[in-house]
Amino acid sequence: MDNASDPTKRHSAETFAAELRRRIREGVKGYEAGAKLPTLRELAATEDGVARGVAEKAIDRLRAEGLIESRRGSGSYVRAGRIPRTSPGRLSVKQWGRGLSIQAHDAANPPKAVDVEVGDVVPPPHVAEALGVQPGEMVLSRYRRFVRDRRSVQLATAYLPTDLTRGTRIEHTDTGPGGTFARLAELGFGPTRFVERVISRAPTPEEIDGVGGRDGLGLRREGSLVFEITRYAYAADRCVEVSLMVLDAEAYELVYAFSAEG
Image 1 (cartoon, one colour):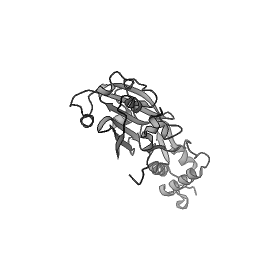
Image 2: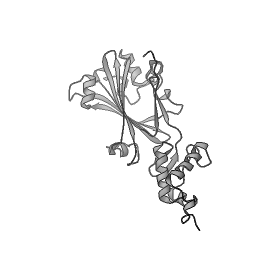
Image 3: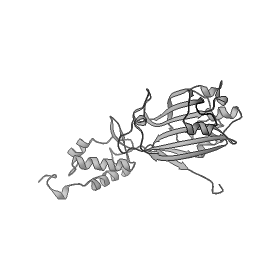
Image 4: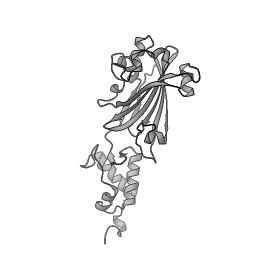
């Protein structure tokens, strides 16, 4: 009697997911961090009592748990570890004030900014209101896509008032050591306070596939989630930057550390 007809040897999605979970957590060869997993067809052909549909449901379950990531057109992989995004330390003047990237605060192998685009745009209404500019008035926009290990993990657009940025290095694709915050500080408008608003949601088609020649995050169309973070940077009482960020929720871990003295 073969496994397909022997109910005692059939795996359910739950039991097969448990077995794969064990292999991943124990680092079994072929299931260590970063390893490419067998295809559904290969799993069904080599795993006793596992039908293709069962394998698919088990992989979906582990993907939802964050143990597996799918790369469109490439396959499924054991997650190599989430990218920590640590606040408020990454935004401290001790970081950018020393000429360091805020991304470098979080990991030894931080995401890198690519596809940097800088230009004047009419911002979304809530951004214009925060920056104190009139509806329809232009502000400086700095768009970046961040990649890690050739994988897109974040899309970010920062908006700044042009009366602060005109003729400065902030208008360049490379803003120099310490980035935009360091350049603002040189102008006497270094950020002293930040507010971040975070929500989790499904990605838009444009965020998945890209738009206007820009690459997207390349996420799955079903079941993917992103973190949408809106960050307001203030110099005293003035908002000097609003940054809208979309992060692949499977790639990041958001870490917030605060003093109990508040």
